[in-house]
Length: 90
Image 1 (cartoon, rainbow, N blue to C red):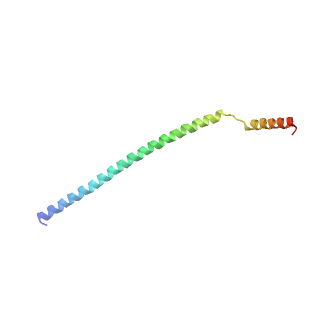
Image 2: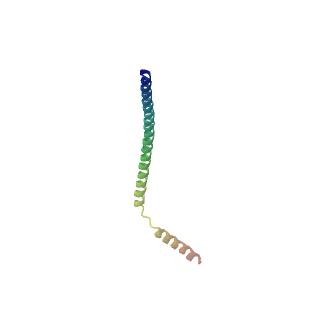
Image 3: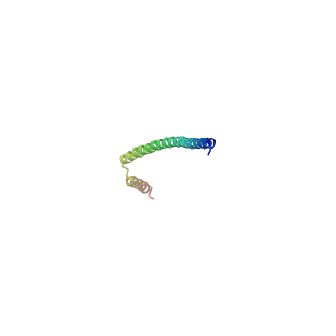
């Protein structure tokens, strides 16, 4: 190999290395961008989860406070209907 061919080969190797590194840097930049987007999505989902958990906790507390007996309502309605029917002789 003469000096010209050796210089051309070295120059081509340097260009190949630069091109490979540019590709790697470009991919790295894209990965960083995608990572930021995914982190933002995670933060939004965590916020939604926290809101849902707070709502669930609030509703559970409300449900615990409510001591509603359906049988009493039904009993009162039956008594009212019986009184009405008995009053009119039905």
